[in-house]
Figure 1: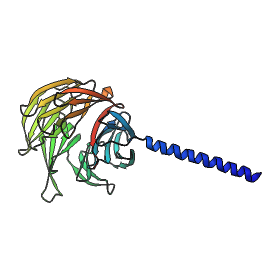
Figure 2: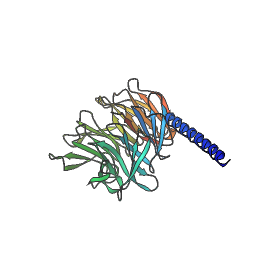
Figure 3: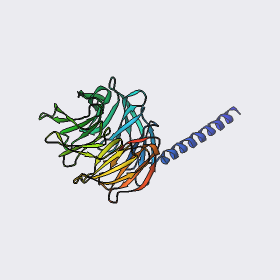
Figure 4: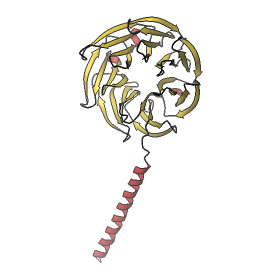
Length: 339
């Protein structure tokens, strides 16, 4: 009798184990794979990263990050994302390393005394970012999981960071000092020289033209754009574009268009780069912030934070073709292509 009961119990246990294994396998199959390319969006009010399939506009996965994630960059192979956790009420001091294939946070790098990480960029297999509260830029090596380089700029509110195509130059926008800093790599590829260039009031969004000749800075405090001639290291033109509070500025890959998001007027401004004239101004809804232009230049994604959506702009017709629902406060975005 005892043997019969034990055998029955064993049979029942094996049945449930097999059932659990089948359910786990079904769950694994149900997880949708990360597409390539993938649109990666930070929902800063939710402290989440969303992976979106640009072909279907569907959210594939949402992954927790640190507090107040503002900016994101993807590795060249499209497998990893790095998130600058800027913080909300309390200054942030971490970088989230996200596995986009496994759809999970691998680790959260503690930055110690560095506060308010922003302007994060992947270059030369390392992560470059600004530490706004410390008035410097820093570099994180994912291979060693260490901060391996720091450079103080002595400027207030160092916020955004953009590399030239050949990686020999960096521009940072310094909101509180009304300046951009041009960093030029020395011949030995180790040291950097710095030149501070005065621009308009409160520069935030900035980008280098694809030919490397100019850097445009959107000045959030006075509604202007400062155009810097890179070789001369000085402002050669100032455009009064009458933005309420410009946030981001991006060149199209062919260098023909410049897009500026305007938080103050809930608008996206489109400029012709050659004539430096306004082409179109679109009302996108409350708080347009981050701008991402796809590599082939066919369309742009604009994060509209106040609407919990990303607007999709056709760069040929300059019309909004669709809106992608997101979490709360979408801002920073990246384009991840696996290689």
